[in-house]
Length: 576
Image 1 (tube, rainbow, N blue to C red):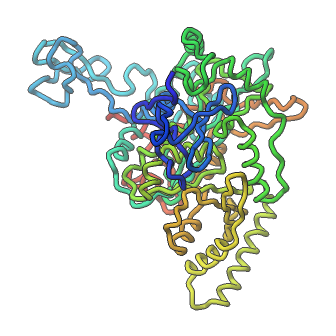
Image 2 (cartoon, rainbow, N blue to C red):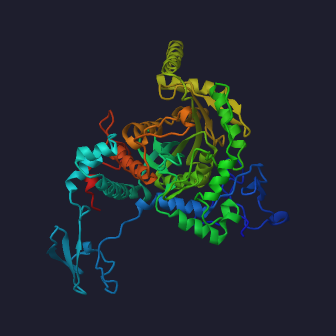
Image 3 (spheres, rainbow, N blue to C red):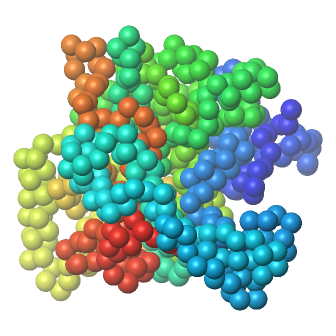
C-alpha cells in the first residue's frame, strides 16, 4: 500500500492546508526519507480509519483523502460540460463514422425526412441511411414540455402539476428526465466558454451548503435520508456556478458493496479504499453508533458561535467530515450517498476550472473546516500565486426580525454620526474607515488562533457578521484589506438557497416534532433523491438564465454568458 493516496487525473490534495506554511500546496512524498532527504510530513493516526499528515513546518494535521475519489466526484459533477458526440455514419467500419453530418456534402447528402419529421441522411461512402431526430423525438405531447418546466420552477407539487398539465403521473418522471437533460445540454453549451478561459475581471464567490430531507417510503422504517448540497454564487452578478448534492444516482449500491467486499475495502483505511467517496452500509452503521448526542453549545454571542464551531471541528477524528448520521436517518434505497467532504472537494475543483478566466477570485466560505480544506486544496496554486483569497464568513441567522431592524438602525445611526464628524470623506471612504477601525480590534478565536473581524455594516439578511481572512500573507495595504473585508458576504448563495425553498415544492423545509421522535415527514418532499439532483440542476439554469432582477438582467447577462433573457422554449427545445 502506498504511503499516501497517489495523485489521480492531476489531483493531489494531501499537503498542508495552512496558507502561511512553507509546505502549503506541496504534497507529501511516497517515501519517508532520512536526514536531509526527510519528507516534509509524517503520517500518523487520528483513529483506526483516519490517517493524517503531520506537517514538520507548522505542526498542522491535515487528514489524508483519496485523490481518486475526488477525481471521480469532479467528473460526476462536471459531466454536463463534455462536448456531446455529433451524429455521423452509424457503420463503425465506415471511414465517415465519427465525421459529423455538419461537414456536409463531401461526406453526406440529405435524404428526406422520417415520418416523425426527423432529418434523414445518406453516407456518401457506404450508402447507409440514418436519421437525426430533434430532442423531442418519440414524445406524444411535446407541446406540454414548456408548461411542465414552468410549473416545476414555480412550486407546483407533482400531483397538482399533473392535474394542471393534464398528464398521467407515469408521464411526469420521463418528462422530468427529458427536461433535466435539456437543461444540462443548454448550460453545458454556455459554460464550456468558462473552461476555455472566458475573461472575467473579478469574482467574489460565496460558498455555503444546504440540507435536504428525503421522506421514508416504508411505514415499518420511518427514518429519513438526509443529504447536503454545496452551492457557490458570485456576489456581484448573482451567477450560481454549481449546486451539487452528495448523492450519486447512477451507481448501484449492491454492485458497489459486492465490489468493496471483493477488494477488501472495509479492511483498508478510508483514503486508500477503491470506493472511498461512497458511503458503505457498514461505515454508515458505525457512524450512527459513534454519533454525538449534541453539538457544542455557544454563549449566545456571534463570537461564541464561532468558538463552538471550532470546538466541534477539533472533536472530530477527521476535521473535514461534518456528516453525523443519527438513529433517525438511513442511506438512500437507490443510488448511493457520497461522503459530503468528497462532494465539497469535487465542487471546488469544478469551481476552480470554471473560474480559470477570472483575473482574481475571492472566496467567502461559511465557517466549515471541510469547506476550508476543499477550497484551499483546489485553489492552492492560485492562492500561492496571489490570484485567489479565501475568507470565513459567519452570520447570526437566529436573530428575530425586530433584532435585525435594531442592529440595522444602530449601524445607520453610527454611520450618520461619522458623516457629520467627517464631512471631508465620501460614503465609501467612511465605510473603509470604520472597517479599518474594526481591523485594529479583531478577536482571536479557536485552536488555530484565527483572527475575526466584527463587520460594522449589518443588513437584514446578514444582521450580525464576523469575517476571518484565511489566506492572509500580510502583503496587502490597509485600504486594500479593508475593501476585501467590505465585500465579504454570503448574500448571493443564501438568496439562491431561499429561492430553492420557495420555488421547489419538493425542497420546502420540513418540520421535525418531538412527538415524532425528531423524524420529519413532509407531504411534498421527495421520495427519490434523484429528483432532488434533477430539480436543483434545472433550477440553477432557470435562476441564471430566465429570472431577471430589478435591473432587468439575469445573472448570466451580468456575467456575460447571455445577451438577453433566455426563453423557456430555448432551453426546453435546445439543440446543440
